[in-house]
Amino acid sequence: MNPMNPVKKVKDFATVTSVQLSEKAITKTRQANSFLTDTATIFLFVLRIIKETFSRDFEFREFFRQCFAIGYKSLPLISITGAIMGLVLTIQTRPTLLTFGAVTMLPGMVAVSLIREMGPVITALLCAGKIGSGMGAELGSMRVTEQIDAMEVSSANPIRFLVATRVLASTLMVPLLILYADALGILGSWVAANMKGDVSFVLFFSQAFRHVGFIDFIPAFIKSFFFGAVIGLVGCYKGYYAGRGTESVGIAANSAVVSASLLVIIVDMIAVQITDMIP
Image 1 (tube, rainbow, N blue to C red):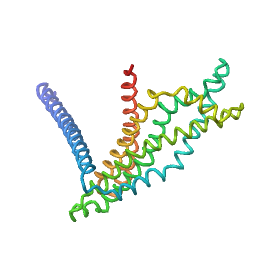
Image 2: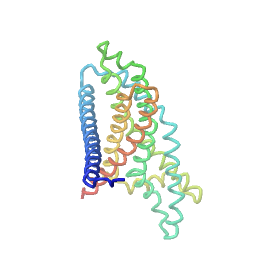
Image 3: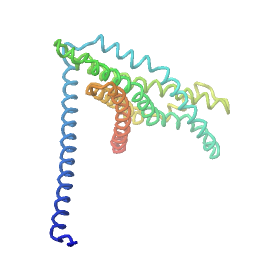
């Protein structure tokens, strides 16, 4: 048998390598094009929402209905979570403060922790799971059943009726839910403090708010609006651009929760960095 020609072997190897490199280049190009297309779609989607939010024909009735669905129907979950946050934080930190003889600092520590960080972030993550998934599933099912297409064909504006109302309602109601959770968290802390001692309601709250200033409340309140806007935008975007199959509803709801939760953490990190620069 004649041995294989070395030159032919090298040529075959070069051909296979060039084909693999070209396939990788095509894959990278497709990924870059997909990323740029998605970025442009999100940017145009946000611009359309802003335009429809400030239009004269804004759907106020649908907006109030969404406020009821987002705010009032979330109260049981937020109530339980807010009270447990203050209860657990007090039970965990009281022994350490008792060791150093600083139990009187407990109300202020709990209030500052809840108002500045724990209350807004945990409540926003809960809202991302409940509100974001609900918007993604609802709009995704409307996309699958072609209800959104029917609105577009009938000269209705689905962005104005379905999306802008939900995003605005989420932007306004999430901060209110966060304030409600903070108040219940401090109340839960008072209940936990009375399990091991005897602290009057008025004294506990006066000590709690004595250590809270505008630098603690204002940045946390401002970033809560961004939390609500991010949750509404992500939930509506994932549902509005869902696929055609029935499995797309579950994919839209799941990706809305994951993306909204991640963006809430990122927004919180940016807000903390900005707040830290304030003298």
